[in-house]
Amino acid sequence: RDYKVTGVQTCALPISADESHRPISLQEYVCNEKGEIYDAKEVFQRRLEVPTLKDRHSPSVLYLVKLLRECIAQGGSCLIFCSSRMKAQKCCTDILKVCSSMKYRLPSIDGDDHDGNKRKAVLLDNLLRAGRNRRTELWNAVSQGCAFHHAGVSVDERNVVEQAYRSGALRVLVATSTLGAGVNLPARRVIFHGLDIGTGQLDALRYYQMKGRAGRKGYDSAGESYVVVRG
Image 1 (cartoon, rainbow, N blue to C red):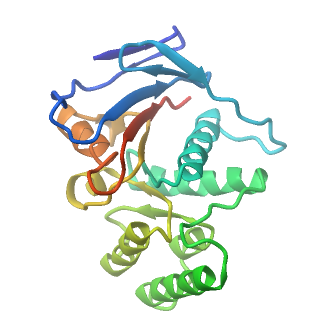
Image 2 (cartoon, helix red, strand yellow):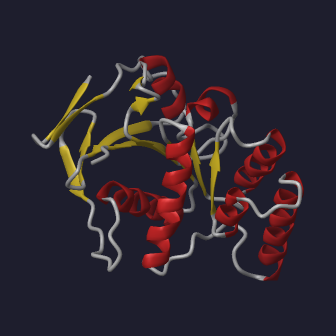
């Protein structure tokens, strides 16, 4: 299936299997370099409006932040897939930089009350122990409400992050395709930051597995998958 992105860039998605059997509906969209969103039938839906910030940021990251903020405002959680470990960590860092520029703090389901702050402190303490008492790049990211997940992160740290995401202490997780294939972490909204993987293109099977994290039965009443074209 090809998504024609208004002549700016064509984003070819792998052909998906028939999903009529899904108990929860899944809507697929593409966001182009202008922030224009098209559905699976190539019909224009809307344009993402993002603020002009003093610090320069990639437009695609601004669109990522807009989409994840929408999801969080609706009470959902968001999985963002990147093509490599390095890109996943950079994407997480860039998201936090944009949030800082917007003076927006990523919330958790726990909230900011006494109990919520206490659970957050336990999460950070557990992550510190998993990281051998070092305040790692991951620890710093989690302290601001976002995390990255890939094979280069220690097993103990990944376990802490996964549990925090499942519980709602973390609402945004940036990951590589290894998460899509192996770990059951559902989301209201799955976002692909491009469709490349390593030095090639994401194949149909992996794409199907990864987008399938959105809208899982028992967690959400609907699911959405977005591909954000990288400029």
